[in-house]
Length: 318
Picture (cartoon, one colour):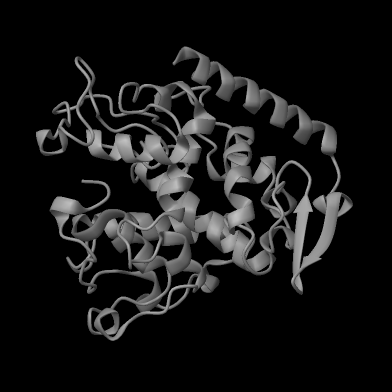
């Protein structure tokens, strides 16, 4: 499987070089065709599949290196725990796989900026080593970690021994941009990415592009059939049912927390864990020049009163 890791590394280098050579707006790379009356586009390496979403701006058009650095200024501080691991090019390379599917490319520039801020708000809060009086403030320390430092257990659930059996000597502690826990989550993520993460979960902490891809995959994928992905809930593709409305689940940032963390965060009132995630999102909106006023009302932002889609025993991050 080391060949797989090398292949990811080579792909990242090739795409990064392409990005550095590109230099121009993706408008210069836009190609358009119509299929059965539908407009489809490609935009070079970053949106290379024919897709309606590639007719919009790509992420690198409105989210550039300096903005990534502004969002995560302390990640390479000497006291951080993943110095030199995370970078802008790894994020853009990972996002390129999902931009033809609408990640950061649904709607106009504003919606793209909001989705990137929302996704990275989750990432920043889940990988932060910041605290209230930390240098630079509590929100400057996202991407401080790429793995759990002191695992309390191996996270091997024998219930899944026939579908996602634990590999001998392997530990499934939290790793990545949206940390993955448990053998079944590594197995399912590996299947989606076509990488053997069940036997080699360490790949996530060895390759930043793969770590970001795993996180974006989770953002773009429903936990269960019939439920929305965080992406669809955020951008408004999801239409709540009557039961959703009665459960106070509405399109917006709050429901992304419900999907990603279930009742570990949601339905518990105004708790710190939930507010920390929201605060990262709003702070990132400000740094991107969008402004936190575009984050939405309290009903849209929080999940304090929402009933979880899934109980904690089946929550995605449990």
